Length: 100
Image 1 (tube, rainbow, N blue to C red):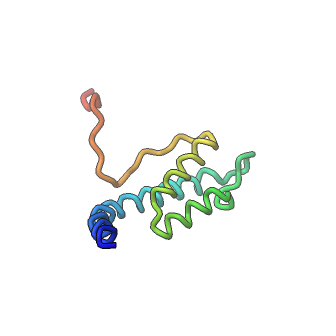
Image 2: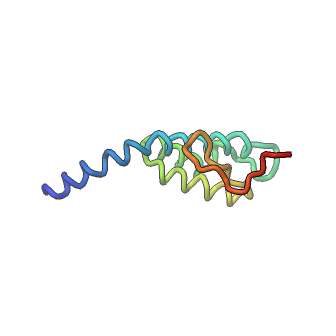
């Protein structure tokens, strides 16, 4: 029992550090789908999509990895490009040419 408690205590700080980025990513993907997944076309279920609703609940309850995975899979299934993560720590892409 002591090992389980100690393991949980060690895992908590790492989870707490990444939670804001994961929450932001979850929110980003859901917002993206809500905006572009609701249209007048054939693939227009938007926020009523069961996968989207479940991912929203996952994100609300702190299960960010599950929500992110579900939303990325849903976007791919609907033939959307998964948007890059924004507002999170990223390394600049190599080969970017800024000169004209």
